[in-house]
Length: 243
Image 1 (cartoon, rainbow, N blue to C red):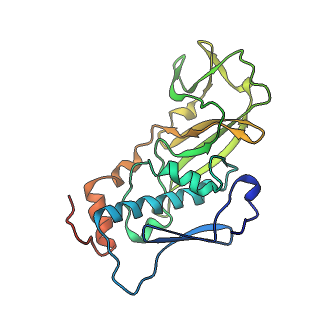
Image 2: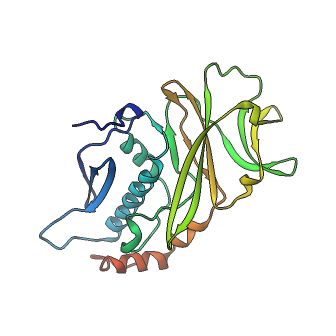
Image 3: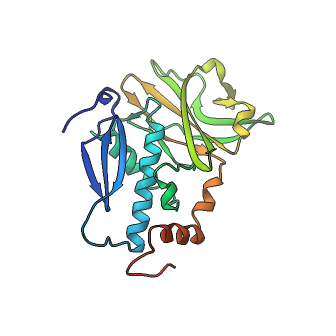
């Protein structure tokens, strides 16, 4: 197995991986997913279709998230670490013409995985202002830890839904103390097309964190109607009828 130039950041990706009728491989530093070739007509039962939709969206999300420096340290392969967590996300059904690039903002998108204690964080209000509230206690000694804020934004780009991620370090001086705990306060935390995750980092260690968001845009792609339209774009299902 060869390591790419991003191995120092944990981005270790095998040359080729086959899962659920899909082949994933690295090309030009990117993870690319393609339907595995076969001389026989591919089976496309409902369970297979659902898993393929999950895998396609997971891979598309990874392509977007990898532009940020991320830490997934609980497996040797960072993509596998991310994918095992992202597999818990709701299934989004998208027509074949869009699926390779479409990405959706939803609660629970993993941005890190490690051994430091998880930050419990939620969206709320502080003195009437929107806020990202945490359970980080004021006055605790965090030693050499730093805090990284990941922001996800749902965009429509030429009729293609895409999530863009960015990351920046946050100083405690930016944070407000509420009932003895830290919070980030600002109008941006009312934006229903954005999501956030605050991650603890200490050298090569990090906390396992995922996106919190009010975004509900993705829900229109989780319906029975979306499933039927997506399945039709792939030639329909085999061996079973739609529910």
